[in-house]
Structures are given as structure tokens and as C-alpha cells.
Image (tube, rainbow, N blue to C red; front, side, top):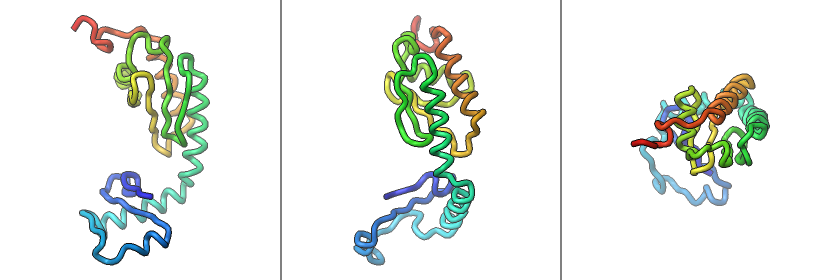
Length: 161
């Protein structure tokens, strides 16, 4: 298994975990990297892992992910929510899209203050932080609902350009 971005919380670092049988195949000098063994990155990763244990990050991801899934499932126009934890995608129907792509809906969300990503023409990706609160999840889904309830503008659809 490989990990990187979240491991250093912004400090460049990556790691590989493997079962002993596989890991024992690596000998000194077999593998190198730009940031391999860098003390600052290793110290940052150690502290990030400590904090993740302290806040029980896996439980937060499961619990808040279930909350976000339920909120999105209840939103008119969302036909499916898929993913794990807090990395989710919501599939939007034609009514919710109202002639827009998910990318255009994502842009309208950004203008409303919500950061999401249109990952297919009909689905939005949600990736809130592990420390997101229930109130913040509700606020974000409310913002999305407002965008979906508002007819698209020519800026969103590109009409008239």
C-alpha cells in the first residue's frame, strides 16, 4: 500500500507498506526517492499520525461519511451516492442538472462557497476534511441544494458565447 499527501499534511512525503515477505525483498540501495529519509518530512509524518490516532480519524471518516451520504441521498435530484468514508460522489439526474454538466454545477457551487469537483458529466465528488462537523456537512449540502434549485445562468452553460 502506498500513502502520500495526507501523511505529511502538506509536507512532501510518501511511504510504502508491505507484508514482510514482500518488504524483505528490498535491500539497502534498491529503492530511492527525492524525499527518502528526509528528517523534516519524517517528523511531520510522525506528528500527523499521532494526531490522526488522537482524533480517531478512521471513525471520523466512517461516521461523517455516513452523515454526508444520508444528507446527499435526501437531496432531490441525487440518484446515487457512492464511495467510502468522506470521499464520495453524488450522481445527479437530468432535473438536477437542468441542462448543465456536473462541472458547471461545481462551478456554480464554488461561486456559492462550496468546493466540489465535477468528475463525470453527471457526478460531483465530495472530499471534506476528516475534521468536518455535522453542521458544516449540513451547510454544504444546503448550498448544493440551493445551486440545484437555481436555474443555470448563461455563464454556467456557456450559452450565448
